Image (cartoon, rainbow, N blue to C red; front, side, top):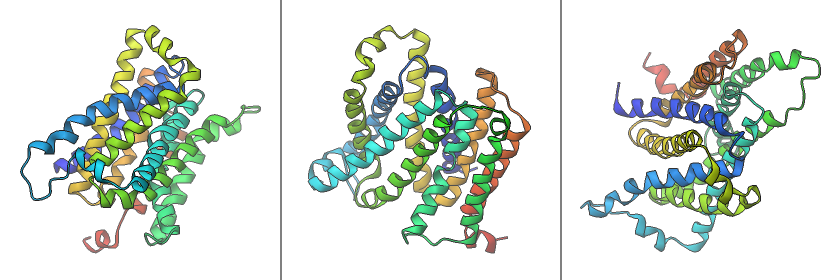
Length: 304
């Protein structure tokens, strides 16, 4: 398998693993604080790759210093989108993980790429095909199927957690679509690192009501290890995602996000003792098929 496809597969696994790891510490680390630590670590992991071009002699020498030449309006827009992608999205996801299992959350969050494709199509930036609509419907059916056990329970409780996770996927879709012009105009890795830094700094302020300066000092070493894993894997995973997109078509890369709920289900069963039942298995299959259909291009069919 090509390195780019291996990178895409690693990213799909990383997303599921990070959801499980977040579920493990979300009771100890408040949602905004966890999001701040996640992307603080993530930004530090991206720094070596951001500054790597400084010593390279290439025809296109775009470095971190180029950020200073970006118009203020574009910087503000990228910062706002970064706050959505790296702050609001993760804060909502962490909030949802307080009451939603890792596998269930991963299934809901796996709607992210399909919602991105659908929104892009509604805005006229990509064609809305029958395959896309069918893929979205299958994936939604998969998520609904995974909720069957809870729906069957009388007085199963509020659905705020599920709504928060779904909202995080919607935020990610909106940011991905509106980020695209800036990612085409400026170096992708540098823009992402800038947005990640802005988000971490903003979260440091927003998380003050959670009393994070004191609470992070009292975290257990085990919790710090999990937080470090979440942050480092997020930074490295994002770099691998960009590498995969650079060397392979987005359709071939996106399909590997189907590994996200499968990874979360397996790790959730092993580490969190969550139940991996037939409903969950069927939901994962439906979402994987839906994602495959939605990202399948006519050229793929012509090669068969």
